[in-house]
Image (cartoon, rainbow, N blue to C red; front, top):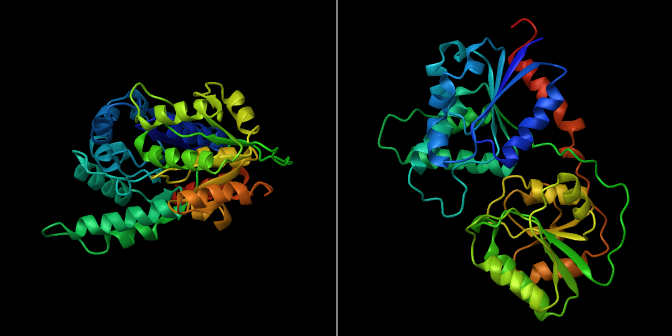
Length: 353
């Protein structure tokens, strides 16, 4: 049995969800070694993970294949661990460093260049959405175009040529039946309480729902942090004052969380950044109708009648789609995605390798 190394140097929720699902699916096909680093100190983790990984005992054994997230400094790691330099590798992009709103932080250039080096080092490059791939390739091309000299031609084209769209697979079975909403619409917003998830837009939509006297209840299930944008506190107060508050707070138990999702009619996104949208997809698989921005990765799997460009359009979607049926997410099932991984790993490392 071939030995597969899975690297996740910033193993937060979404990366860990992907890693665990992939390892479980491939467990019967490969001997799997997983190596992770905690999801903290983002800039150091992104730039220093090759050093952190370099001398870990788990990496000192022979491998046949590598699967690494795009946070991995693959070129640096291969330089520090020569026995890894010729092992076939797939790099998986959950996100990219070119498409975050307001992305002007210190160290951004190094992070962007490192992600380009990692993509070039890989045999195959997987993205979780076409939006992710297209923004990465466009961003890489623009960045390299600003460099003063000695930039090889065709780098973005080379990466695109070995890339594929392979979403993160869902680990829940889609609902088989659905019920029509009652007179009060039950809406859930299930994202992190952070700036890139659009608290200002959420505030505006809640305000408009109340102004138009829509009978609704909004639950906020997203992960909260000690410091979060003040708009969230304003939204919670507005919901309570007007009698529209559902459940507020992060649900620790996954089974309980999925059960609560299935009790809602709609799932709302107000995100400014979304490379796939696992939170939305899990709610959709639980029977919720999505109401999402007409942008980002959403047009790849959500029909136009469920997307909005303005606050008024968002409210209109709630009113017009209340009897809609759940949307199929068969493309995101392990039954579809799992064989794509098996085929790709067999392509870069056939039985005789």
